[in-house]
View 1 (cartoon, rainbow, N blue to C red):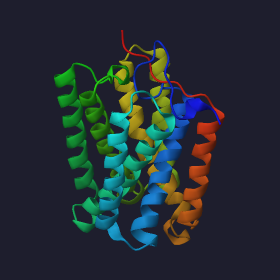
View 2: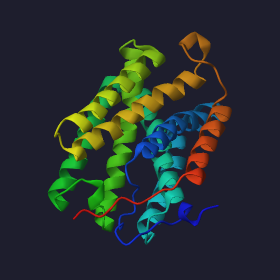
View 3: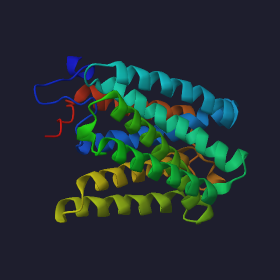
View 4: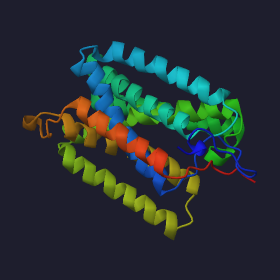
Length: 257
């Protein structure tokens, strides 16, 4: 097992977040899908419900973020554990707000877009940049993880809205979000649009993609899913993420100059 799996540092890499590469996006989509199946496994299959599930995952998220901030350098395993924690708490929190509180998908999406925009705006006004290359202080890390939590929760609500309310279904929604991500890739290579703005748009869109793919895997056949076991789907996704972590080199994002 490579030591880089647990800590990565170089003379030029001082952030504690990973370099944004194709591998980053592959793991991100797998992690968001795992967040959906794992969140549903606890809240539905195990019968904890959305509120208790949110409390459990929120506690895990808080511990993971505290460890991430305390760390002195980039730890790939710790980073992705924290990301998975944001996806699971995002799943149960969005379901609680949309369903248990009766706000509905449209209302939930509106609230979460507002919170996400407020987080990004406050972050930029406070520190002057929302680039991952500028995450060099505990304050920046807190903004980063709060923003990610809002984006993951928004993605769950957005995925549910497109699949159910908009009537696209799980497969249709997955095609739409995949197409939008493809468009962002084209804009990245062929335009001068801010790479930071494109990064956050892609980061947000990978969450509803993972949410609808997760739902497609474990929802009943009558609802348009494959009716796979949430436990089995979660185990396979976790195994895939671990393979990506153990088999490939992971580097920290370089400090902004």
